[in-house]
Length: 364
Image (cartoon, rainbow, N blue to C red):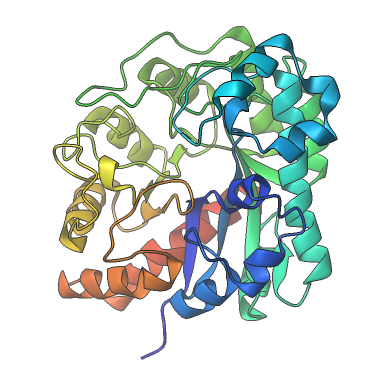
C-alpha cells in the first residue's frame, strides 16, 4: 500500500532550531536527537510539508546567543529577567516588537538557508502549484506562517517585509495580548470567551491580509476576536491547530458555534495533536489512545464535512501521545483512521488534500 502523504497545518520546527542555535538548520537535514521533526523522520512518516510557524517566545526563553547578536535589544527588564531563565514555552508574558521582529527574521532566515543550501530537499512555497511540485520532487514543502503578530507594528511595515520573504499565513495572536487582539489562556476547564475584540490595528491587519491574500489563522484567538474576523474577513476561516471544545473544554478549542461559522465559510480546522487539548479532562496523558484523536476528527467531520477537516499537529511545540511520538509515527494515526472506517479518499483529504485545495482557492 502506498504511504499516505501528509501536509500539516502547524509545526514549530523553526523555533526549535532557533532555540538550539542551529541557524543553518543542519540538524533538520542530518537528524535531531530531540523534538518531533527532522528530514529522516519526515521521510519515514511521509510528512511532505506544511505550515512552518515562526513563534517568538517570552524573552526569558531566547537563547543567550541571540542577545549576543542583538545587544541593542537588551532592556533593564530583560537584564533582570535573564537571571530567571525558563524553558516554559507557555509563558504568556508580553514581548517587545523589536525583540519579536529580530527573532522572527532569524527564524525566517533559517527557512531560507535550508531551501537555498538544500534545494534538492527543501522548497519554500507560496501557492498550491509550488507545494504540489515540491511534493512530486520529494522535497519538504514549507509554507511560512507567523504565530502571534508581535513582530509587526501598527503601520504593518514589517508585514510587507515578511510578505516579500515568502510569508503567506499569520495568526494575529498567540495566547497573549498584543496590539491587534487578545489570545486565550491555558486554563482548564474554560471557554474562549475571554477579553475584548480586535483593536483598530487588528481590523486593519485583517483588511491588509485580505488585500495581499495572506491566510488568517484563528487558533489561539479569543472568541470576541474570532467573531470580528468572521465578520470582516472575506477569506475562508481557518484554525490551523485546534480541537473540539465539547470533547475537551480548553479555551484553545472551538465551540459549536465557532465550528459552524468555519463550516459556513468553507474553512478548515486542523486537528491539534496536543494531549492537553484532546483529553476530556485536559490531562497530559502521554498514553492517550489514538481513538481519542479520532473522536475529535469524527466531531469535526460532522460539522465541517469531508472538505473541512485537516491535520495541525503542533509538532515541536506541544506534548503528544506516545502512540505517535513524532512525525515518523504519523502512519499510526492513519492506521487508526482506517480502523474507524475512513476510506482512502477521506484520509487523503484530511492528511493533505484539504489544506492544499484551500491554499489553491486562496493563494493560487
